[in-house]
Every structure is written in C-alpha cells, then in structure tokens.
Amino acid sequence: MEMTMRIGLIGAGEAGKAYVRAAAQPEVTIAAVCDSDRALAEKVAAPYGASVHINFRSLLETERLDAVLICVPAYAHGEPEVLAARAGIHIFVEPPIALNNQKAAEVQKEIERAGIVAAAGYSWRALSGATRLKDMLARHRLGFIQALHVQGAPRTDWRRRQEASGGLVVQTATDLLDAMGYLAGEFSTVSAMAAGGIVASREPGYELEDACAALVAFRSGAIGQISCSTLAQDEPESGIRLWADGFEATLTSEQVEIVEPGRAVRERHAFDGLRQSLMSFLEAVRTGRPEKVTCTYAQAAATLRAALAISESAKAGRPISV
Image: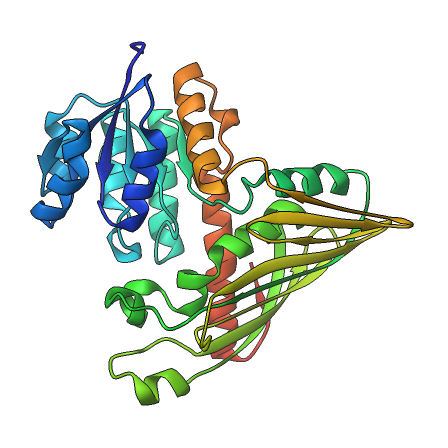
C-alpha cells in the first residue's frame, strides 16, 4: 500500500461527515464522496478536493481506493459492502450493518473470500473506559449488567419506519447491546417485551415501538437487562452499569466510574469512541493486521443477531435463543 491511504465515503449524512472529519489526517486522502443527494456529496467533498458520485457502483468501479467508509441507512446495507469486498477494498461499516441475519451472513462470506479488513463503527466498545472494564472482567466474574438508552422520536423518515429501520432495538440500541456483548461475552438467550402507541398517536407516520425491555443471558453465566425507548422529552440518556465479583461500575459516553471495597475511581475517557473505532480500522489497513480493529464485521453480525432476537421475542412473547 502507498504511504497515503485513499479513502472513499458512501453516505454523506451526519455519520459519514463525522467519520470523514476523523479520517482526515496527513497520511489519508479523502478521494471520493458518494451520496444520492449530489449537493450533500459536493458539500462534504469540497474541503478535501474529493471527486463526487451519486451512485456507489460508480465510485467503486472508477475510483482507486484502499478503503471505503459505508455510512448508509440500515436498509441500504449489503450491496455496497459486497461490491467493495469483490473489488478488494477494505470496508468500515456504520451500524446497524443490516436488517436481517441473512444479508449480514452474505456480506461476511464475501469478506472472508476477499481477505479484506472489515470493521463496524460501534463506538461504546471503543471507549477507553470500556477497555479498562474488559481487562478487569478477565480477572473478576461478571454477575449482572444493565444498559439503558432513552431518546426522543427520530426525525429522519426512514428511521421512523419499521421496514426501513429494523425496529426500535435495531435502530436505537445496538451500540449499547454491542458493548454488553463486548463486556459479558457471547449472547445465549433473550426474553423481551415491547409497548407502543404513545408516539404514534401524536406523530403520524411513526411505526416503531415506544419502548422495549429485554432480559439477556450470556454463555459466561452472567445475566443482563437492556431497555430502550423513544419517549424522552428532553436530552437522550444512555449508560451501562455492571456488578462483578469484587467491583461495580458505571459506564457513560463521557466517563467510567469503578467502585471497589474502600475505593472509588472516576475517569474521563482518554479518547472519543467514534474516532477510536475508525482509527483502529485505518491502522489495521495500514499494517495489514485485521486483529487491530476494535469491532470486526463478524462481531457486529453477532450483535445484530441478538438485536433481532430481542425484537422477535417481544413479538412472539417467548424466549429466543441467539
């Protein structure tokens, strides 16, 4: 690979812009930007002198790229990843990575066949505080983990539609769910309940549940709970709490607090999780060492399976194996 890495962006929305800003560094060239909204693509491309595309196939077929950042809506994932893999281009995917397990499995097969680096932008597991907790849990048995995410109703049209977004859990809670899996290990079984009708009664076109809560069992023997809702009237709230043999902890997007017998420590994260997840991907591409990524595509696919199992459990009214 050349000293300068050539990066493309597919999807120039808020997530795409954030990743491009993080990727812009001396050893990286933002070479091409694609969005179906040409004006948006041109605006994002302009500061970097990048070429502009309105069709991702055109970008992948005509540009000489080392890697591509795929930041499209949930329903549009799949074909961009497959075509990039077939072209030998390393991929970084903004989650949720798909709307069903079959599509994620198809992409994973193409990744393995191509031998490319493939990462997902789950930011909570990339926080320095999460890394510290993971190290501690290698020495202390986890008993219970709890996650909460509450926000207002999404404003973007596709995020409000069930078929396009994947539903409440897939759309709003997979980052926290992924962090739970990172800390507690492989998912085993989920049992969920959901409620709806409040947001839809006041906002026409809203199709998601108002709230969902799930009990989660892990293969490690730990259990957990995750709850999410779009009923917040004010600022969003997100966080994780856990209780282990010898300590308990609270993880937020800003800091980690660890309480041990006779001792409590509170530390702000050393770096931004979004930026760190991307930096680990670029380092993996640069060095040819896929193990450097914070979250592999395969790990993101495991998170998707758990999220879809929670949604299925809430509809079926019974536990679902992940």
